Image 1 (tube, chains in turn green, red):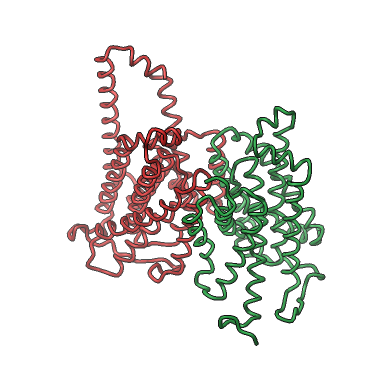
Image 2 (image 1 turned 180 degrees about the vertical axis):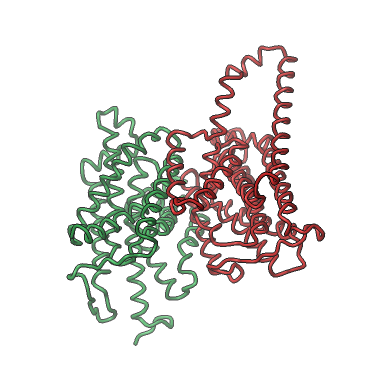
Length: 295
Length: 332
């Protein structure tokens, strides 16, 4: 068997795929955060909870309504996204004129409510959600063994990222969104319904989180606390990459996943902390973030 | 605005007289509060009161940063925990060490951590500052899980309270209470003094308009860093004291929930008021205490979340802030 720096090739490649898959989640979540931040200027602390709600919606939909994985992948982001729009319309909008730190605090409170409620109903131990038949099993690629579902997550997440990029950079709605990010007051003066645009944007960001949640459901135990610890890592990823560009969020997310995977192989003790250490390094060397425009 | 204009027009002697009387009233008010603090352990369970005092000091430290420098730290749990762990480890491993030395060491360690965090986090502003502090605190959380001296998931138990200055036995709850009360008064007075000093005025100027403070020639980063370190030190003092009182240090103190709780305490009591955090901490700790015994015990975090949402939506000045508004409206 081939060894790379004293580690069997198969193990290394296995961890790299794991890292890439984690990175895909970082990318999806930080993308959603960036989209929301761009227009609303708030950091959505409920993002982790909404990701968790996505996983739970898939689980419960299957358990009680018999909704299969493929349907859930489409339905759940829509449902959770609509729920997010209600949150924006009835809660976030009330504080939109205030310091943006209040948005962070409000969404933090909401995250506590969602998480605490589900902990009381379902407990903290995770439930299992199995991947559809077609995505089970694995492929032998010659140099490594690739579980099909992980491969699928990578493809689906990247497709979603591309879809988001396309929506924002190549459609009329996306052009509004970009213009609104630059100057929403001017947009309103031009007759664009900015409040509606804000609601849709928040809903879209939340939908992205829920989509990531459905993708994650067969991979990780579905538990009420699955989102919060992940979100803090995503925050670090956002600090590293900056929230300025979509491509930046995707590249940073994936590469942080790879770095984490490599650390797991070569220095497992630091696997939990390596992304935070990278963040410290970036703060020291390039305070605005790798793709950030402003400090 | 009009108030100050009136004052400018009014005869100087009247202004001086009014200020003197206001100061007198304030002194009397604080003396009354101190008297309440001195009598309290005869009326309520001292350990419960000590818990309130520790969290009140923690919240005051946090408020120094948010309320007066306008910096929202989402990572203050790290300072509380590091103070607690260092004090706990030292007192448990060196039986000869007196508690006040342990607390000083814990506070120093939190101060040092504050310097490190401060240097890193003030490089970013606003929302990024909050995220950076949160991420740094999470880093410390993982460090505390793995470090050899923290007891990992179990934490440190059975930390001896020891004898204050070598001759006052702190296993007596009353003696412990008055020690904690003295520490609290020291911390509170330090914050009060800081806020009302020229340094505090510059902090407020930075909070209100940072570019203007820069253009006036202030080294904004140095002021922010000093405020951050001071806040971290007092938070560490609170954590160290808490460890001596409860004889344990655990991961609960390092968890991000704790960083959230201290924000809630400050917000509920009143951001940017001196007594608000004390009020907020008393309420939140009492609420947790009451809920823990009721059938709603498992719903604590949901209820805290609801209070959070209500505070942000319609109660942003907090209790003390609202009271002060009412007072100004009706009595001036």
